[in-house]
Structures are given as structure tokens and as C-alpha cells.
Length: 149
Image (cartoon, rainbow, N blue to C red; front, side, top):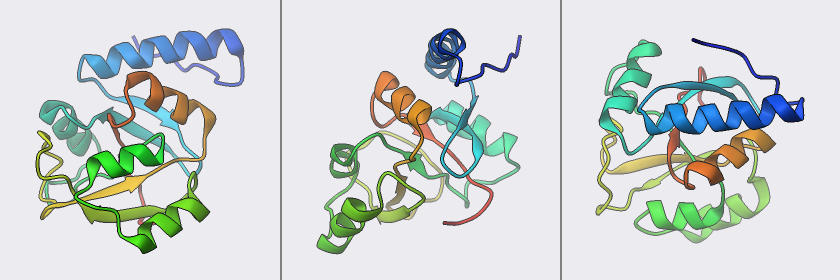
């Protein structure tokens, strides 16, 4: 059964976080607040979850979703390398509404769609989103936005 949890109420925040972690571990979608939108989130390492997310948004594989991260260490882990300019941008604008497209780490076992060897990374400036990302491991959520940032 779907329910909305008010993240500004401590007891609802804790219960919402617990249920969101469970849903993500079961390849289900959750709606979470970020600094720019409320969005659908799913486990980026589950092909089924990513497919469900793309289907829910009415998108095909040619529109891969960005991956939300909780810290810059995740950027390093998910990419082949971090160019100096990308590092400077991350230092200034993360967390925040900046999405960077970088070459993805070729050893990763995931299917985000037709990425052409890239991954779009974003660190949201929203306490609940960052806490959830840290709770499920720093690389597990994808969030398709309604606009390109």
C-alpha cells in the first residue's frame, strides 16, 4: 500500500526511510524529494528496477537516467577517471543541481540503458535524499528528471 511520509516529521522520516530502503532492495520504485524535484528512484544496479523506472516515466533505453550519489567518493568509484574540471565543478556545486556526464567505470555491472559508456552523476542538496543514498550504499539510486540540468 502506498503512503506519503512527511520528511519534516521525525517519526515519519524514520519510517519512510526504512520502507524506502526495503522497497529499493526489492527492485521497487520510491518517490523521494531532491533539491529540484520529487522524483522516482530505483536501484541503479538492478536492470529490472531501472527498466521499471524508465517505463514509469515513459522513457526508452535511449534516455538513461542519471545516478544520484551521496559523496564525491562515489563519483570516483563510478567513473573511469575524474577530469580536473569535473572535480572543480563538484567542489563548487555539489551538493546541488549540477549533473555531470562522465565516462563510466567499465567494470560496473549495471544497465542504465544506451549510455554509450557514460554515466550522468548528480549529488542532490537534500537531506533525506543524501541520507537514503548513504543508507542503501552511495551508488544505488537513479532519478530521471523532467528536465536536463
